[in-house]
Amino acid sequence: MSTAARTNDRMTTVRYVLVAALVATAFFVTYSFAVANNGNEYGSVTDAGGGLGQGGSGTGAAGGAGCACCGPTGSGEPIEGETTVEGDVQRISVDASAGYDPNVIRATAGIPLEITFSQGSGCMAQVMSRDLGFFEDLTTGPKTIKLPALEAGEYGFSCGMEMVFGTIVVE
Image: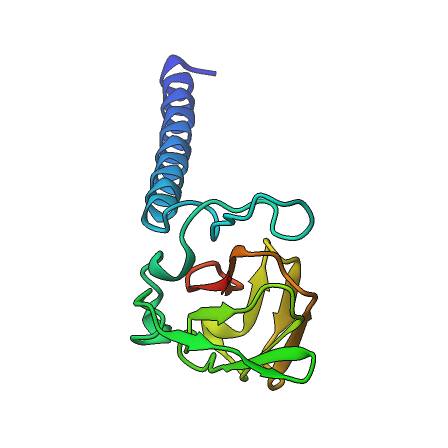
């Protein structure tokens, strides 16, 4: 192989390595920026007890900028809603068609909780909570999440893409 051919092969290899390094750097910078804008990985838990509510770290209803498909309720502006106690359970409905309305759910400690999320699509096609261990697909219609009596604290939930957030505040 001639010297010119070897030089050409080396230059091609160097180009591929540089392009791969550039792509990897762009990915990590974009990912770091997205995580920084969302505050951290997930909604905060402030209860000191054991059981449910372990793990999370920070955005809740006020964090996250939402996404383009979610409109103003996906913006992170607090929209509060209170549960109503019916017998031995408390209930609330959340409109998930364009963000969460309400995105701050106020509930009473020690009473089982049922949250009915309306049908969602796009980035609102799923609802999940790492704090409470649920994940539901909302594309086929409303879904009711049944939770046991919770201890006082804050529990986060989000869309499946973790771009739109809500908080359950148990007092």
